[in-house]
Length: 159
Image 1 (cartoon, one colour):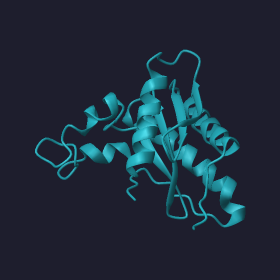
Image 2 (spheres, helix red, strand yellow; image 1 turned 60 degrees about the horizontal axis):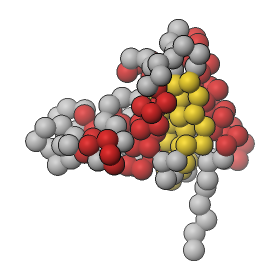
Image 3 (cartoon, helix red, strand yellow; image 1 turned 120 degrees about the horizontal axis):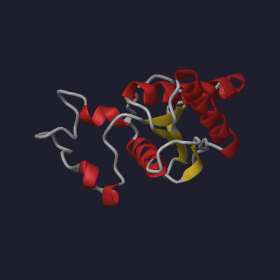
């Protein structure tokens, strides 16, 4: 038997708050979803005025990042992105009834080398979604720092 780390709702709320705070700073309306390791939502928030499609898109991105253990944009990063035409996972975005997202804005939440969830963002361009996602990961790192935990906080994550 092994002991596992679980992302809790308070931590997910802090991540969402940091992402929304960054969105306010850069002037973008985001929807942010934080999921557990199975891709199920812990917290989902759509900023006032954000697109109505944001909740589903952000959840899809968080689901993909958590369950496939990599940042979603890495699926389409040339030349070896697995979802690019001719590569082994081309068409994977049609998996899970279209829930699999292979574009920028989804990041796995990795604590001490273990994927414990994902964060997905929708509303900005790729750079804006990335800034807000990294802010969410940095907020979790700050929360867990006293416990000696290490959270990956870069945009390009593949476990």
